[in-house]
Image 1: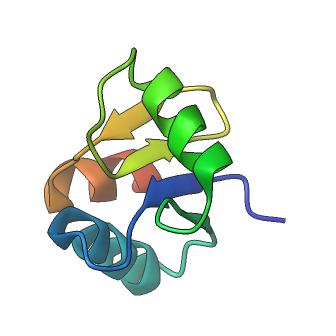
Image 2: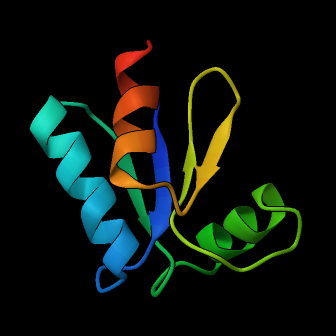
Length: 80
């Protein structure tokens, strides 16, 4: 089971970019579609201190990134 969880929607521009970074780096992740999953929506908002912005990406070390740039996400993933 992947240790990285991304909360987002299929049509979100930043979510599409994050998925591309994961795919390019061969990184496994779980995508939680907030369109069809109210629990995922609530978790994402809670992780982001009550603010509704996506994607929210949770890493195994407990850190999160919200709306990361391509470069920021790539740097985070390659630092494992």
